[in-house]
Length: 459
Image (cartoon, rainbow, N blue to C red; front, side, top):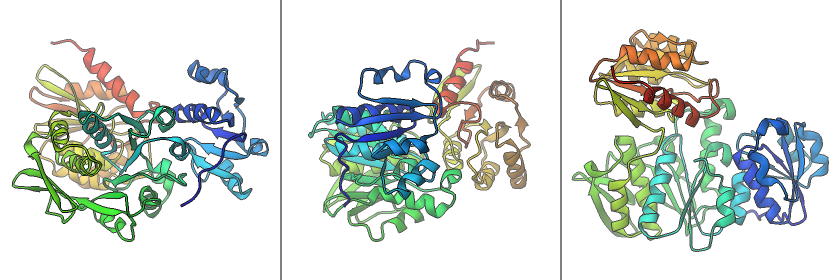
């Protein structure tokens, strides 16, 4: 395993002043480094969000090209939004400088038992459920990472007896070095983020890196129903546990006689009937299995795990019920940022549905989603918008789906959905795309959807 970098007295160029960049700069300053704060945007573009760095021993180099700043730095730390093949990273690597991402730096200073969860879909639900399980068990649990709270913030407060539950993206895994979770999971892998990773092979390789530094004392959890995940198990040093909703596994989680069962190290737990799990859908059964395996392996009592499975009701922006108005139910799945995620949302619809699709172009295919929609008995109307509108129109047409309505703005899309829906129907926002063509993040898109819907009055 690689050794952590010694930041004491070092000048560290930190690129990207979003939430992760800000918090890793605070962490580095607290460890005796001198962070050089860089972003292409000038200081005035940030408002007051950078004020937390005032008074620290940092240097401000905002609005500048980062490459010339490498001359003044001993190491480079990048935020998740900075690609590993960006000019500054490539130049730093060429010079032999130490390069790490925010997740890696935080891991070098964090105290406690580290859990890492990745996958194309289900990460946020799984880590939030895990956090709930450990809190039910009376443990101090920190939830951070790709979920929105930077891991660096957790690292500054964590203690050795704590549980550190981290959601880890493929972007963050690009720049790890010593990152070593005691338990790690890959929930599933489907096509996503090819605008960043270029090929599916590279994307898969990034996901598998979560197991890179594990040893025989650690736990690797994988989806036994996902062929890509099954192949990932080959050559791992850690103990491997699979979860499957389709059949029994030797080590891991499965369903027997309608009950969620976990089997680990010769011990078996029957946790609860699957119908009592508080989050709906077959995909959430998989998420629940992964969380239960990790929680039980790390010592959470069976009663706490079962209680969390029954009481946890899901996360905001993921198949989130907003309201019912004039007999129409409005559902916010703004976190549906790739086709497979939207497939899962469509599968949870239990009545006629108007689906809103489209957004930022991540260079992925919608062909499988289009075929799924065409075969769905519940999708009765479609509205498409955003940068992917032309591609969606083409691939939906090739699959023989209903002719979609089109919208120029997000507001128009939601209003059109309201007009198309009939009493007893759903309106589902599940774009299958990122939000960056219209919003800063999927959270902002989901909040805007909820604000529009909650602003309407009964007719």
